[in-house]
Image (cartoon, rainbow, N blue to C red):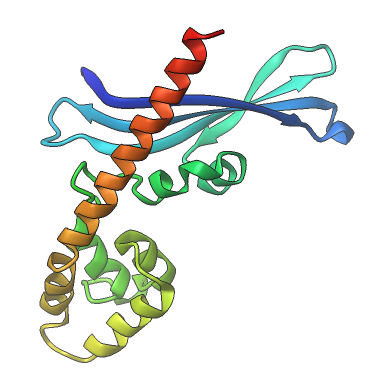
Length: 183
């Protein structure tokens, strides 16, 4: 499977490790950008990290990673807008926007799957707005269709967020390239 990056930003940060566990330092490498895999119609935003720990013998060993967004935002706060766009396409539309919103709102075949936090994160709205969206549509036979209408109405806002995210990536990449070329 081939892949391409239309934007790719990589940064590292070393922080003190838990000495009580025999770890001198922890190194976090974050990769953020727009990524396109074969078979996808559009590139999508992705923000992931690799975490390594430095043992007392100075060897670095893999310790975790993935979409550890709380850690990423804590260590790289400028990436928060990109983290919010994680798995959205280059127009800002979240992955499986409608079906995931219907699922997290609890209006799918799995009503016990309702999760206000996930709905808010998925649609990039406040928790209060997510709860209001659920409350306003609760009990209606066409609740899923009403959620789909809400999702469709977000496209302009999402496109603005994606443009801002791409501008931020461009700025970070340009600064990184400038710093590397002037060292």
